Length: 255
Image (cartoon, rainbow, N blue to C red):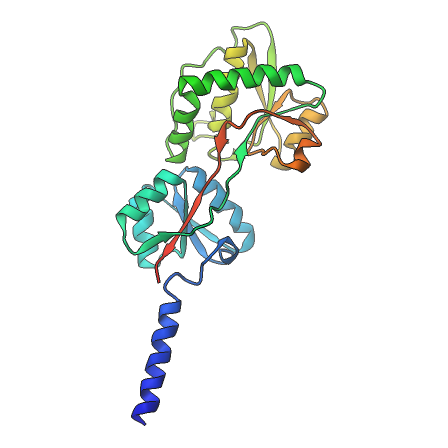
């Protein structure tokens, strides 16, 4: 009898140890789980993509609050950029980052295949912005859920206008704030590029699935919205050098 009881207890201990990270060992294990991210961060954008797979997304104001929720079991995993992930791990020794990142692609500006000259100009503007530190600062701000304030504000002062397609329902890339102002990383980048080129910018809303088609059909000169220069996409449009890297880490509880 005692031996049987010992075996049962040992089995229960093994089962409990196996539940230490809620069975999450890769992004394939995320569907159906409650997951968290820092409010307004790029990690939140990636987390929201899992709602169609049965995930509940909970957002927190700081990486430390995110870490506490994960450690206590309020959520089963967290999605965060490099700095927020580092802050989470620093806040709790009971957490770890999975080896494989959730995403590791660069986001680029899409231009029509028939307009390589515009692509060259856009790449030049992006290079200038990168050299000034503008893009890195913008990415860092939105990565941490902060809305930056920039001096690239030449709209209305130029003779020509560039039409830019964005999906205005994609925070932190493009979205409307509480006052109805269009903001976001893609919006900031597009405005800064337009200012350097010397044109005004007019934004039009296009659902994410139609962004590349918007430049193919001539409805917009540029399109931004978490677009990557994949082999498939390169057959449809030209793409600038990446202005943002999307690497996100998945944080889970240790066993």
